[in-house]
Image (cartoon, rainbow, N blue to C red; front, side, top):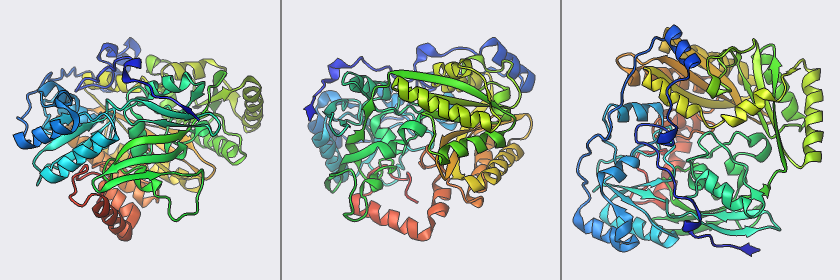
Length: 534
């Protein structure tokens, strides 16, 4: 095994996201002309400035608790200033941003604590348990379902456990093709460290530029290349976790029959059962070539049948996604040209990564299947445009919010035989509750032999009560998901927002199991209270 410790100084200083926007503030842009024209035509423009640097309530953590936290991680790594607290307030859902833009930062943590390793995490948890402080593990701050908002009632304050100092590649095994990563590494940082070893993780969710390794694991993230590389939980082979009752190390072999797989307790646990301090992942060789292309289909149903055929034949490309007619019509696959003219029908994006011969062979096999099913090749231009703008949609969302347009996303998954019902029912629920004018768009984003996920994007006028309007529409959509027998979330996680429907999905026995596990690992209930566990 090649052991490697990489100092944090070897990585560029990270850019912080603005409290009221997504991503790098320097990349914020007004709407492109074509997009603004579409907005004016469909919704009208109602420019809405955001409140900058809203005041925060004073921290409630007492001096004795602060002294204990400083003893655990060092004085320099305990922050109570307003600027730092603002940056660790909530996530980046549209409701999160609407509240922040209105000057509401009431969920700001009282103190931001930055441990440097597993032992310091454990020390912070010990202080929090003794002082009865709520602890919210914080990675990249990209949560979109309320997973970074702890219940305050009954606690002496809220600690944001900021993992920003835990950014090392701890080990690489070139024989077994695994790597051990600390949880604070952002997606690009992890890929840069692995690339120096000739490796890649291949996990590229839309939040890739800011989300972290720990966050990927804690929310069961799924990347845009999941058809080729797998979901993040499928990439995890081992975990080290700090819990309030002690350390746990999981993953001693590629497969095991030694009882239930306890890794699954912590994957998707959203910081409620423990803090992930090291994640061992499966890695691949860096691809020598990457090829992306587009295909046209007469209808969403035709394209979905084609994807299912590929999945069940074992011929999935590295990337495959299918936009419905509405999403294709406004060119959402190319955020930089939103509102531009697009051909009729549905756009499919396929991508191939690997060694040249393997890519050529897979592309030829997929092309034969898609052509035989009635697909029309659209060349590499659509695929290259999608790849160039694959992380830009959240910036477009912010620009639309600036113009008074409510934009948000939600997702689900189901089996192939249930796809038509789920698609129809969720779209109908959103349309009925958003009213006119509104756009409801959808694409298939992740694919399996047995089914797929559906990712919906909505746009509507904000009006006077945008939060209430969205909450009513999303509740109706979630009701439709559960009524259709689908999951409440495929990769956005549960947080606060999905808890009522999560309880319905797992049933009363499942709820009792979750509560029992929570009590066993976190008897004082300090870890992200109110999140996930019904």
